[in-house]
Every structure is written in C-alpha cells, then in structure tokens.
Image 1 (cartoon, rainbow, N blue to C red):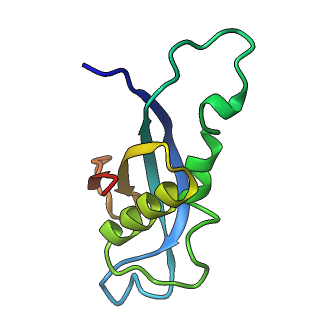
Image 2 (image 1 turned 90 degrees about the vertical axis):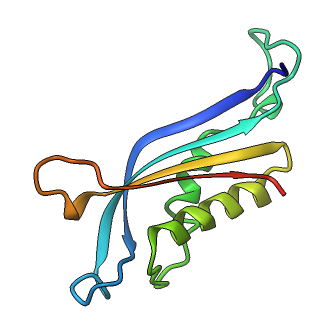
Length: 123
C-alpha cells in the first residue's frame, strides 16, 4: 500500500448563501466544514523540511471561505462541496483526493449534525 498524507481543517465555520427554501434564499447560512486533502508524501520529513514539501493547510480553509464566489447562491450544499474540491485541485496538482464534510448548523433542532460528505478523486 502506498503512503499518503492527509491534510485536514476540521470544524471550520463560515456563512454561505445556500438552500432551496424561501426562508433560506438571500440569507447566508452558517455551515461547519471539515476538509481533507490527500496527497502523496515525500519519502521522509526531517525537522528542516520546507513547507513546499507539503501544502499549507490554510489553503483548505481558504477554499471554504474566500474562494467561494461572493454573492453566488448555491442551492445545494453538495455544490458548495464540489466547488471546494475544484478549488483545491486547481491550487495544487499534487492533491489526489478531497473530502468535504458540511454540516448545516441552522437546521439542527436538538444538536444533531445534518449535512453531507463528498469525496472526490482527481480525474
């Protein structure tokens, strides 16, 4: 089995224009993101290995915040996840797969976590 490196940003929250119901449209909704990016690691990471040997994990957070088009309403959170995957694949050719978990915080009634997880392999 080949080695892999999983970069992760977990439980990051951002407001995103999303939803299909009238009360959802036009108002950003709070979403919680966990994003993982899988890439092939180098053979060995020494104490002085530069960041260029990996990827800045803040790029994952950026893909779920500033990289989402301002003012664009996503009907489905699946489309938000898809956009995040596309952004990360475009940022770095070394990324082999991306997993995006999105929880819609506004629709929880008793603390349950309602949302989706999309895993996309580079095509």
